[in-house]
Length: 121
Image 1 (cartoon, rainbow, N blue to C red):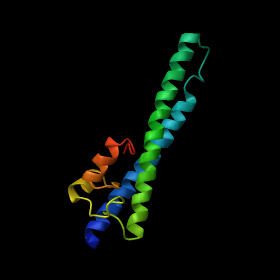
Image 2 (tube, rainbow, N blue to C red):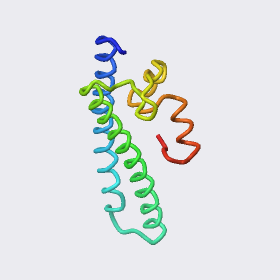
Image 3 (cartoon, rainbow, N blue to C red):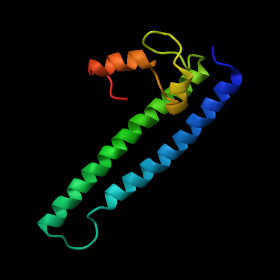
Image 4 (cartoon, rainbow, N blue to C red):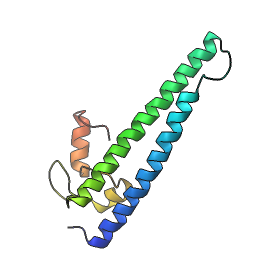
């Protein structure tokens, strides 16, 4: 079981990550909306802007998923299940939580689920 100090450390790390993700999402979203709104464009410019907008929105989607995972991790801290794999219910390695504080799975379960194509993150 994780001690209170370690839990507090991960909670703060997740809160910082959440703030950063929200800022990035707002920035990217506003940038995507502005794309192609200045001046007259020919079809090549338009196609390029559509491509860039889709690329940017793809990044927004990834960040939105990460934000959802961070919020779920904060919820697990609140209900006392943080640091426990949601698949096998074993403790998630500290080293893994250090790199991915929103980790839901231990390394073994994550590898297994990725192989089966059931998860991406």
